[in-house]
Length: 158
Image (cartoon, rainbow, N blue to C red; front, side, top):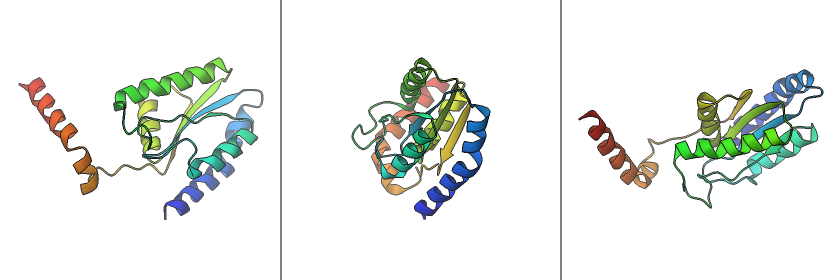
């Protein structure tokens, strides 16, 4: 099911969004920070074909390994993740891009949307946004963090 949704988004992107971006920026360099999903990596099969196609069309694409990757295992907070994305956006600016998009797949889509809400970018591409904290397995992994957040919230209120 995820593969069908991803393919559908990819087709929409290639037929609708990409031609608009390319035609509006014939001489401009467009940069994209493309964020992988939860437990994924920059080289995931979900993104590799998209990266190849984007670069073939002249986009400058950065695919960083994010704090929620399989190898980093949430080594930074969500707020720190925004700061990390800032570094990649700055790198695109140094490379001469005039428009910057932040894109992501699954949890990366959520991070891209959050980043765009906190900062200024030219666009966001949310590919199959996903995050299911209501699942029991997910809750058990974050039990300690939830308790700390509840305690911190009570301290601030009282």
